[in-house]
Image (tube, rainbow, N blue to C red):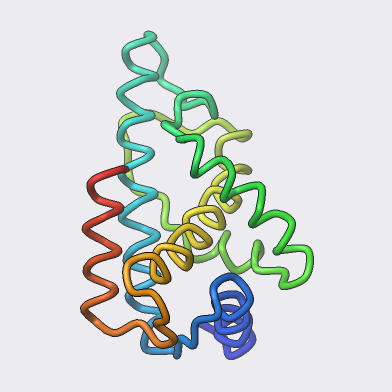
Length: 149
């Protein structure tokens, strides 16, 4: 990731939840985001197929109320930080049996942003007062999201 990207992510986590992450955390973050996007798209694919479609539409994505709210809060925050172009690059699109509609593809960076904001907030819930999430906090956050998404 380019240095400007690292700087923006560090700033994002600081503004979003008062966290100090470093470039080593970005690998964990990237793995988390790509795993969760894959999970969401896999379920969306099942919904599309159940409706006899080969194209995943935005309404096929299993977006919870909390994730939707995080996405809206991210949009407001992103006006200041401008992470969306970077999120477009890091959100891997896993191979699926169904194609993504253009509208779904366009929404993925915002969904990734919502997941990012929810992750940042989750650290402060899992370990109140945490400033620099350690491996243990990353694992707890991952297990929590695995239960819900």
